[in-house]
Image 1 (cartoon, rainbow, N blue to C red):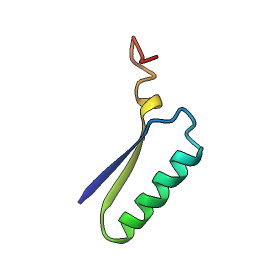
Image 2: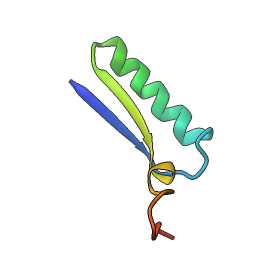
Image 3: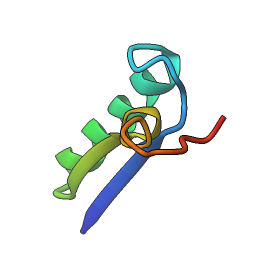
Length: 51
C-alpha cells in the first residue's frame, strides 16, 4: 500500500507536518510505503501560484 500525505500548511515544520509524520510513521510500521508532499513547495514553481 502507498500512502501520500499532503501538507497544505505554509509552515513545513509546524504542527500539521508533525502530525502527518507521526501518522505516516505508524503506517510505515504496518508495512505501507509513505511519502509527504508540501503543497506550498509543489506550487512554488508555477507561473500563477494559488493565493
